[in-house]
Image (tube, rainbow, N blue to C red):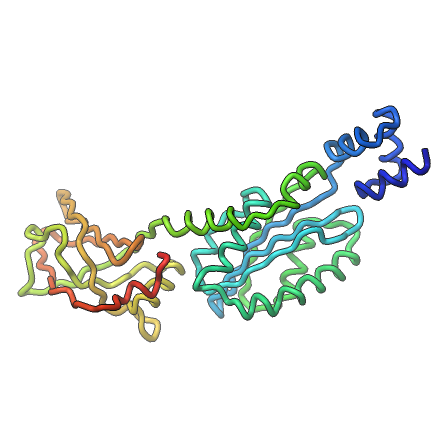
Amino acid sequence: MKEQIKLLMEETGCEANEAELALTLCENDIERAVKTIGMLLKYILAFKAKLRFKESNLFALVHLAVNAKTSEILRFSCVVSYNPFMYETSIDTDWFSFEKTIYSFRLDKGAATDYTQGILPKLREFLTVKLKEVPVIGVAEIKEMLAEFFSAASLEIEITSQELTLTQFKRFADQDFEDDVQVIKDNNEAKEVNLLSEVIEDPEGTAVSKLSKGDVVVALITDERDIAHYLSHLMGGRKDGKAVPLEAHIKKVVFTEDEAVIELFYASSILGTAKAGLLSKIKVVTPQKDNNPWWKKIIPW
C-alpha cells in the first residue's frame, strides 16, 4: 500500500492522504486511482493577464499555470507588443486558447521580439522565487508580482484565474498547437477595424449628394483609441502626434434627415466612418498610383 501511495503521489502530485483515499475508493487499482484524482482534485491555477504600459505604448499578455500545492510553474508564456489590437484579447477565454493567442501575436509585425525574448527567462525566474514566498497563490498575489517585476509608471494590469483539475490540464498540456496558432493568426487577419474619421471639405469640391462608391476623398482619422493611433501611424496618418490627411475610397454614402454618413475604405480590413452636412462639398482627388501602396506596410491587416 505504501509503495502504491508513493507512486500515486509521484504521478499526480497529490498528498499522501489524498492518494490513500483514492486507492481506497478504487480498490487499490492504481490506474483508476490516477484518473479519480485527476478528475477530483483542483490544484492547478491558470492565470491570464494583459498589461498596458501607457507611457511607452507597449502592451503585454502573460499566461502562467501553477501547481498550487508545490508552487511549481507548469506552463509559462508571454508576449510584448506595440500593437494595441492585442490588448483587446479577452482574458475570460480558457487558458489553452489564451496561450495560443500569445504565440500567434509573437508572429505579429508589431511584436517587440527582442524585448519579449529578453524578459521571458527573467520573468520566469522572478515568478519562481516569488511563488515560493507567498502562503496563498491568487489573482492579487500574481498581479502584485507582475507590477513589482515591471515596476513601470502608469501600468494597467487586468488578470483572472482558472482553476483546473489535473485531467483538465493534461487534456491540452502536451499538445503541439502550431497548426492552431496559425488558425488564430488567420482569424485575426480577417477582423475589420472601423475608425472614426472626418472628410476634408472644399468650397470647390463635390457636393455630398453627388458622391458615389469608388470616389477617393481626403480624410483625417480622428479616432482616439490606441488601435486607431497605431494604424494611423503605420499608414502615415499621424505625424508628431497629430492626425494628417489620408486618401480613402468611398464604400457607401447613407443619407439621414440631418447628415450624410460616409463609409470609407483605407486598406484591407481597415474602414472608416465620417459624417458631413447635407450641403457640404467634399474634396475628391485622383488616386495616386504607386507600385508599392502604403497600406501594404500593415498587412496582414
